[in-house]
Length: 298
Image (cartoon, rainbow, N blue to C red; front, side, top):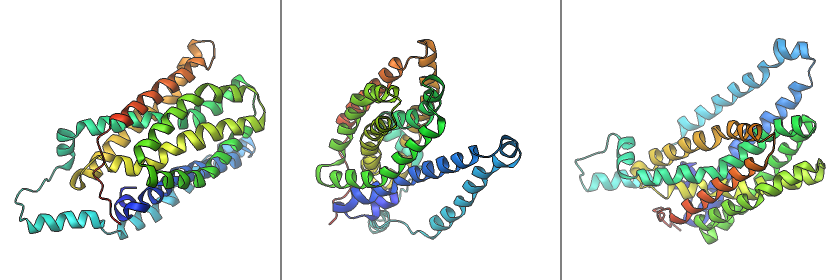
């Protein structure tokens, strides 16, 4: 993602970096499709060899990724920084960018972690917790929910491009605040639409909650996050904030949602309240985030 941000020109940076974010959704789409195939196997075959299929396929995807990364050169932005460093004959070279960025820009890292909540919470809620909860509590067939998730993943491609284009015109901050507030506004309607048990209404709920709410946030994260750091520590800073935020915000969401639902008699009300709270926190973080330091190249 960072390499796309730094390779792209200023006027196209948002849309190009937004497309790089669809990689994770492609993985979700493939994983859901494979899972649907595997679940149709007889139980004996599923337990004997079928469960190995997703793991074997995922291993095959690692090799092309490693090859492409090995062939990539440093970005023009980073090469320009190294060249300027050599011209200025800078004697001190930061050998520990992780230590430097944590020491000097910990606020930006913290902001990114909070920003991840509005994006990660609805995604893991809709693709992990809801798949199980809707099946057990609403009696909706698991395949029905999985098909809805696949439709959402397919729509994510044009939606990411759309929000990337919008961010090129209005800026990442405005798009992020919109997305966070939209997620907060859709938290309760999302569950109301699920309770209808209507396939059409469930698709509408997922499209609003994920394709507009989540996708608007996910699309602008590369440009927004990278812009909070200077070139020598940009990779370390944005990665630390994004990954820690993903663990805290996304990794714990299914567990938190399950706990809140169980404590309150399998009700989703407090789960939706958790979504609202975290989304509003992200909207506030987007408002107070430092100004971008990305160059506005032509």
